[in-house]
Image: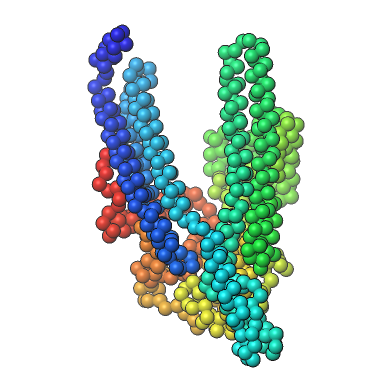
Length: 311
Length: 320
């Protein structure tokens, strides 16, 4: 009852300009809501379409897909830019205008800062939405490389015994999947023949790393999980340290301290362990990659050494 | 510990700083010194070190201050890794260079570019230094990097690779190996010598006698535009912005540049490399900002144009 009375009294005392702030805030909220709806509607339509284009794009480099993908991202960024420009123009400018006119000592100054906080919090939510849709769109690039790999293997099985010498006509067995054009000498007449791999066969070197990563994704995830623990443990410990401030009971304080020490120990372990898990992942990924394209092993191993060195 | 830190930050330690009456301790002072003394410093054209001191003394000073700081950090229980140590040296190098030469940050960055290989092991476009017998630069099938770049330029200009091979007098098998081994070396070479040198040749639009007769078709207008993007930085920035805008509207930007301005991908990339090298060599933050802003503004202009052609943007009807 007293609260109600106070509120009325406060409202009576509200300055005239407050109505403008309220209106701006209301407009801002509605504006972002509409943009979010557009974004959702657009992404929901684009995602299945992108997936379909990727499926039907026969081009080795999926250029049509990438063109459309880039256009979809362009529209999404355009929405985000529109929000940013509007925020600068309609919210920040208004805020700065009042902030410069109304003294921080004024009892109404909090209305100005509350306006800004409410609007920027709402903006933050919008940006999260944007990030969400951007990631969903990013995911349309993912394709099951096992299927593509299997096609390459099947094709290789079909052609490996069908190559013959241009000179004597003798059958030449293709011993492995060649990634580029290669000279093969005829076992009978020793003539040098040029074997040209198919477009699909050549594509093996483009998908090999992706396939190796796909196969070792669980190891990467294990590393990521461990890596994230450091912050979590830090925050847990920090909260405990805050809880000590108003505690005077020595026994309780000791208990908290013990828990904190334990968390710190775990945290130190994680700091050392996460890079180890990364190394485990990296080695396994390169091993897998080398299995898929043994011809690239020598080069890949040098790249691996550089990467280990720079980590 | 704080005394040392303070000493490191202000340059207030025993060092050969006789060239200037006092080390700068405030911005105001810095501005004054800058105005009065900047022109007096002479730089070695190769190293960009001031000629009033010895390079070995400079390196020794960096090492002395860096090691003192490292020892201090370690004494207070800090666990320093290799990259931290590199970072410490990097900061002191910047600081002492600025101090001893009394220069602005642009000059300092030019100095860093000129010495990137020496101090960080990485090449910088426009300051490339190549030692003899670098195994990464050994010719492949008798084809050196310069010739390989010349071939790449022809192919990205739109000439069929088979024709390029014919002109070079070898079979496509050789090209495919070249086009595997050179890029692999670029990846393996942590000093980026191969990549940077490739970029330099690309910027120079190098050619070899065998390929001189292979010319990509270019319209009269295209030739004029090409000349202009090489000489008029604003025009180059405009097209770079336009190209970016095209991609954002689902248009193949490189193809669009070819159709609209008659400039092929090879020539465009070559001009891009040329401007990047120029920018590195004459580092000037004011100009960089100016060109960056110009490109952004042009990108916006072209984006509006593409949007209009496509019937507008998705959220055009949403208003505040």
